[in-house]
Image 1: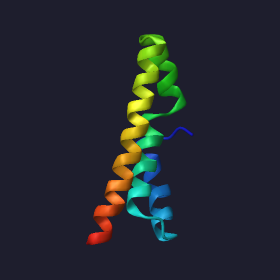
Image 2: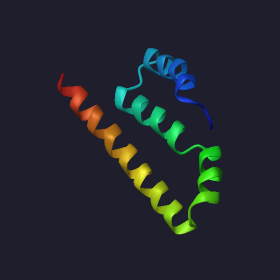
Image 3: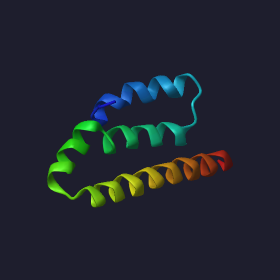
Length: 77
């Protein structure tokens, strides 16, 4: 799914209204903008496949960690 950051705001608001946790919404917004197919196609032309795989891996793991940590932090407040 491709969307710019401004396109994800209405989706995030709808998810929040439906009861989704804030960390989940944050992770969704980061993943949609960071790991979009058009971005990967452009990066594939600029960097080597091994570096692209490393970028995708680090971003995915980082987004998951941030989402979980934000949910944990938000549950205390």
